[in-house]
Image 1 (cartoon, rainbow, N blue to C red):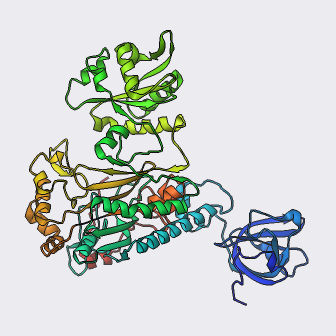
Image 2 (image 1 turned 60 degrees about the vertical axis):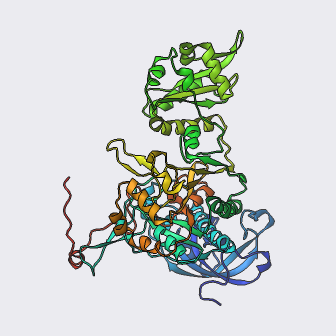
Image 3 (image 1 turned 180 degrees about the horizontal axis):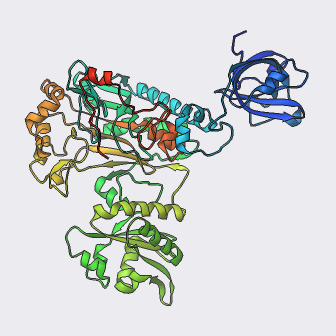
Length: 592
């Protein structure tokens, strides 16, 4: 017999009754029923109930084991009585009488329990991640992650792609976040960088003539942590194609992403129609470039109804260029109680409040109520109702100012309205492509124009588009949004060297700097670069959605905490003096 097991803890069934078997695993739970010891023995695959009575030659040894001891048992498979069958377990029809036991690894008192659904502080869970990962829901999450990646690989191969690996140690590049720098021992005073993405290398693969590339790629960015973003490293399904348009990328990736969500979505509806929404419309309608389309609420510009109205705050605001008033419809939200709750929400978000109108039965039909209605009068409130398509029992909330200032709050308010009024479908994955991103943005403080998105994207209209107002230039850039999360981002690349240089010059980088920083790509583009484009899909975020988790750390095997620390491995840590000397570095103490 094998030294550790003849079967896993999920394999034994009634057909094995009478067999001598060997199992290994962890003590999941121990129960003493009238002197008979029942042990739920667990491995990665499942649970088998094993037991010992006082007549067993190893009863004393079984009595000594505790939760999470790793043990091997030999025993005989017996059928459970009909009344004791556990239909929730694949092994629920049998149990194993222990004839021999060996402790493979005992355990100290546990800092967190593996059995049950107790909640523990995240720091406790991350410090003892090896125990946290033994818990059933974490085992399911990590298995799901592995299966999703395997499915992605299979689907990409079936679509005619091949997987190629790009370097992990490379040069610094502007991807929109801070680099992790790696000092060079052989070249004192110089540094490598961990790649924020395989961006330049995958473009070079296209110049090299490989046509269709993909990779399950690790990426490294020194970012501030968020619930949906890891602060140090993450994985993405990275791809690139030659001789393609933006629509070709969409047509290639939709079956891959759609197939993964169909396969692992737990029966949730997966939308087949993925609308293409411009960045400008996404901001107007949803207040964000990653809208949750499960929520049907769509905001609208209602500035004209407040211009010159009796509501002085909005009327005066609209006298200044660039200001708007937006309405957030709330079908079914037409009660003062709900309106007061939304007003309290706005105050928690740092606003003085949020104006509202709600519609109810009146003497002459539908009547508008609320402070705003009194200020602007019945004609304007009726025009607003008609524009928003609302009726009796509905409400609308209003925010004004420069859109960039109030859109984040408006987006949150829309989410709250959708959730509280039961408008957002919970058992659905809703996708949309967000397109036509602006290539450039202006810093409000310095007035400096810089790239707003990927700097290697092709501007719509080519070089001619760069002759006008840079803030009007749109790029062939696109994101895929699912249920309020950005899960994919990409672009058609700027493969024409003169257009690329001109785009960087528009953003304040002269040709010399472009050559210095991206010499490999610049040189390659001189030798027949094909039109190409691609994207990257965030694996961690996709698995988070499929696992129905709100925190990305729940689907990463060994994540950092919110301060970008690895509590289990004590990273980051201080280097030794010898390491610093070898690298020619000195640490300057930080002042408190």
